[in-house]
Image (cartoon, rainbow, N blue to C red; front, side):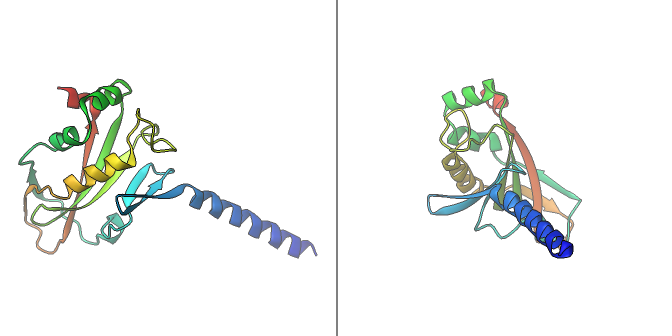
Length: 170
């Protein structure tokens, strides 16, 4: 009887842990796109994205990259001047992880947010909204870096860029 009770207790604890983990990922739809918001890792990903760090098997460590136009201009076109000032006062920042093909075209985007950047309701004007992230993703996927690489067997190159809103005020 003790064995059955212990087994039941262990199964219950395991189920509770799984439900806590899955409760940390919220799915929301914006402009026909479904995004997963991982509150544990502070990550926002478009569910239609198929490329991520897990399925990049070969990495290229030797490449040069140039921004033909500053990525900051894309942020400035999405966020109003007032919103940038508000986010800068609060020391907010977003890290974007871009997955580019070998010609430099951005094919996937992930957003890594500071702990306080993404509100629970996604409507708090002092934080970044999911609609803004969607617009940012659309514009970033139109972007193409000047990329040169000697890696011939690599399909995608992940890049990361930190955008501090205080730097956008300059």
